[in-house]
Image (cartoon, rainbow, N blue to C red; front, side, top):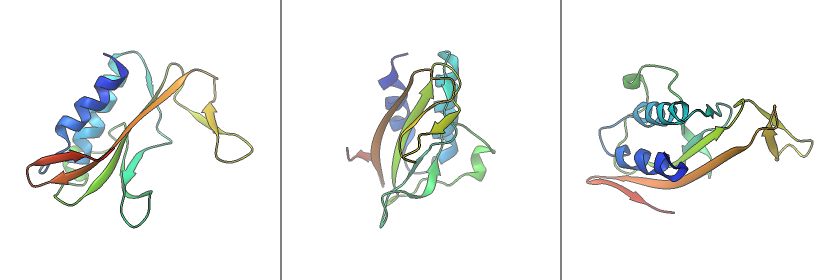
Length: 125
């Protein structure tokens, strides 16, 4: 599966009545099935008064889907697909902004900002 397809699949299920866990589970499955590692230290996030705010949208499922936030109209989230060819563990550079994988493997991030609507979702980016 091409990298952009992971994000497209997440966008298809980002709609009213679904859960953040549905997105997380789908991303984790497609990333790991392709032989990559999920970057767990960085996540997608809500967007509102602040650029980065709750709810967080991880690329992995860490609890039952129904225990994650239900997607409702008006919610705006950044879905960020983050994965690495080696370890998904990250290390911050001295500037505390730049990051790299601990094992220096290649990593990638693809992102779209999405508004949940009454009839599905609207891609804002």
